Image 1 (cartoon, rainbow, N blue to C red):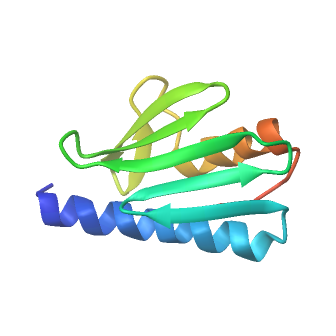
Image 2: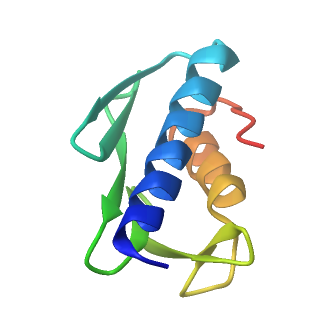
Length: 104
């Protein structure tokens, strides 16, 4: 995947996450700036989701740890455990906030 393809896929993914959080009605504040999406929860904890262009990955920093996702077979896959980004991110959100957000 070239840099342009990566940037489009990663940007679209961050937008999908934003839309899902907004539409969920969950008490989650979010801010997106320069390829970095910050989710902030009522308890003061945060999850950071960001594009890593040099690695062509999406990185997630959650209370439970840091995770790297590369694009393969039409999905963002965790290079440490093989899980899918949207499924795992929904779990991280629930673990930190108790909120359920469907990410697709």
